[in-house]
Length: 251
Image 1: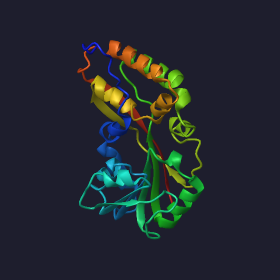
Image 2: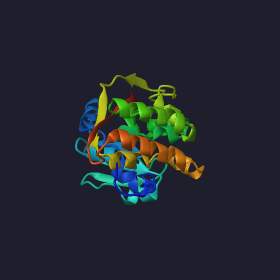
Image 3: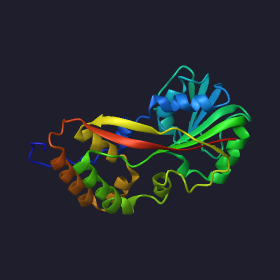
């Protein structure tokens, strides 16, 4: 437990924490996506955020275009020699007809107008182009921490998630996907985080913002106190694992 007398508000800086604490996709994921695309000329990352996955794809594709509706995300995106960004919605992609070999949406497709987006995929994708809708599932911690976390996720913070969160939790299985589906090997995101990093990540959740706006700071601080007691030394690094979920298919 921290030794100072005033309890720290771990959830105070969610906006500032976003880029720092979002889990990074494994490099093997980008290599797999390149291996199933018809060629490696152009990959398009829709809803690219700060460009985490786009940067990994740039190791395998001649050109990668990251697209996001947020000008702030684009302004602060990671840079690369064969990587460029455009500010635009998923429903109106600034990409030439029949030009993309791979279209990906990582932790973003649940926000799209899917029928319109699917039409854009058909327009910009070349014959045989691959579409991959990617997300990461609920994280897993060590035993006692995991039990307390899942109670927080399911019962305490659960009511503050937007309805779209159910699509992520179901691994996009309930979403319409009018493409020839492919199978994918299992992937996982793995981190070793201390207590500050773990709670910093939680502070990026829309549900945490929702709870704070609803005046339920008590829910957040009770969880932070409980998990701090289980964690022990806040500087101790502990393993955290997220399953990577994917719907993947051909145009």
